[in-house]
Amino acid sequence: MTDFLFRTSAGLCLLALVAGMSPPAASAQRAAVAARAGTPGIGWEFLVEVSGHIHVRTGASYFTYNRTDETTGEDLDLDVESNARLFSLAALVDLYPWTRGGVRLSGGVLYNGNLGDVSATAVAPYQIGERTFTPEEIGTLDGELSFSTLAPYLGIGFGNLASPKRRVGVALDLGVIYHRRPVVKLGGSGLVAPTAEQAPQVEDNLSSFRFFPVLSIGIGYRFGR
Image 1: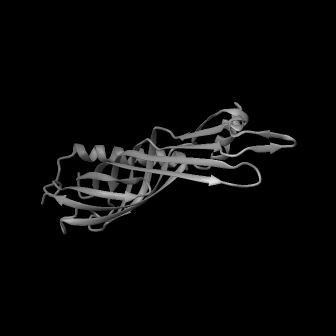
Image 2: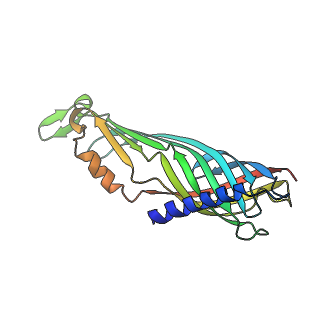
């Protein structure tokens, strides 16, 4: 599956490069700019029609999420603060098998700046047998999640933002980003401070999260004839 993503994305980019070396058709002077929102975040993109079958585009997406929860149970009472940052820069190629249709195959590469971190801090004493530990003795556990910097993308899309039929259009993208297995860093203090073996164990548990699903919708404006 991963080899298929790499080879298909590279093949689409090579196809766009070959097409770009050919003399452009008279109709291949259209471009579009769009606002996008979806699972990669909120952002923009710019695309150029290389030929009737091939478009190239670039864009950026960004989103942050922060949340604080207090967990109370039979074990520890914790304040858990979690943060996520989605950030990506994309260079993509769109292949339209049918020039009169809006269905396309998309592939390319992304700069992947997605990050996540979590911090859990004890807020109440905890008793083990006859010994009671203070929150300071229990300590804090910190975790950070990061991914590979470069990630291939492969997907299918619907809608042609450079279509000569309309100035304003809508495009939908469905696909997957392969960002490899997440890298985990753990730190902390006190009784809950992690050992050296725990980070690799967490990485193994997250090994199935190598793919990031993409569902994105864009509204764009076309320039040119």
